[in-house]
Amino acid sequence: MSLLSQPEAFQQALADWYASAQRPLPWRTAPSLYKTVVSELMAQQTQIKTMLPYFDRWLKRFPDFVALADAPSDDVLKHWEGLGYYSRARNLHKLAKEYVALETKPTTAKEWQALPGIGPYTSAAISSIAQNVPAAVVDGNVVRILARLTNDDRAFKNNGDAVKAFTPTADTVLNHDTPGDHNQAMMELGATICQKANPLCTVCPVVQFCAAAAAGTQEGIPNIQRKAIQQVQIDRVWIVQDDKLLLHRIPDDAKQLAGQYELPATTHFDETPKLGKALATKSRGITNKRIKETIYPLKSPISALKSQVSPLPSQVSALKPPPSQLHWIALDQLDIITLSGPHRRWTKELLKQRL
Ligand code: SF4
Figure 1 (cartoon, protein in one colour):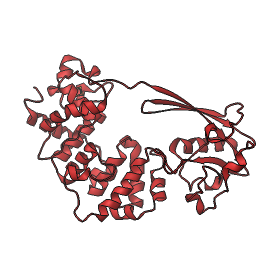
Figure 2 (cartoon, helix red, strand yellow):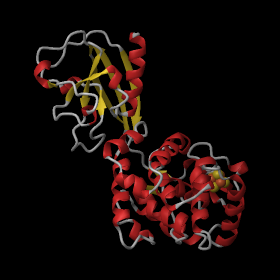
Figure 3 (cartoon, rainbow, N blue to C red):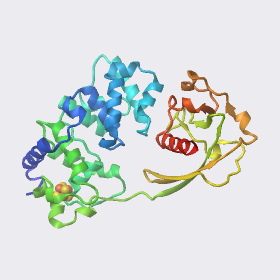
Figure 4 (cartoon, rainbow, N blue to C red):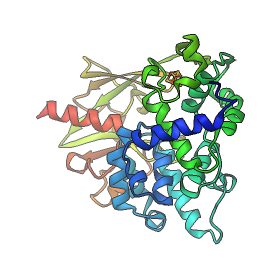
């Protein structure tokens, strides 16, 4: 059976499967427009199982658009701590403020795109799921499913080109009666069955429509050029004195992680510190970057440090630090500030070793 010649049969097979296989997620079991918006922004760069505890905590603290709009930004960032890609939290905060102020609320995918942090994918997801608007979502997951179903091995330079190319197909197969469920079913199929590596074709509910599965070509599809991997090395220092840890605050105008704390890198000092034996080495990947970070202990501050470090903020002012970028933070105040996710983990680990 071909997908494009029988879109209704495909929609039905997908819907039957989704009705029994969908995961009971909090924004599905007790849905609301606000929950859909929060879940869609949180899910932009994060796996569902990772975001679940954050979602619950967020809903407890900011139960609706008004509560979020009224919250101070430090509080919003603190509740996002550990999820990464903090521009999503800032956008969600701005979105809530704008949404609350709007006299006429958005009811189409295009209108949603006028709000901060909402692109074509998220606007289609929100308007279809919460407002039953017939807008098809198209992201990497949907591209993968559609390319395999149609056995389309065209080469694409990047994800954006592939999304553009498969948008008409996504529109053709969209179920206009239940667009929200259809879109969620596509996302669920991509996340749990039609995965990048080792797609589970033997249990796939739409295998009868899949030209790639019939041809045995599914593993190589879609054919999207990978970005070259970039290796990055960062040397960081660990300085604890008088029960205070020296941290670097990322400037407010930084593109990423603005306002958050991290262990200082050697480049944050006017004078390069002399490094001895490493305390720990950490590796992580962010998009196409492989980042290796080595943390070195420093017993006493280097000479130039004194003039660079701002006075220790008080318990209250820790949330509104002074403009200089290096700060002594008392160890018992570390929970008050927002440390970027990996730095929170490393700090905990290194403090444990110290005890
Ligand atoms: S049959 Fe396999 S390749 Fe085709 S859509 Fe299902 S999981 Fe994906």
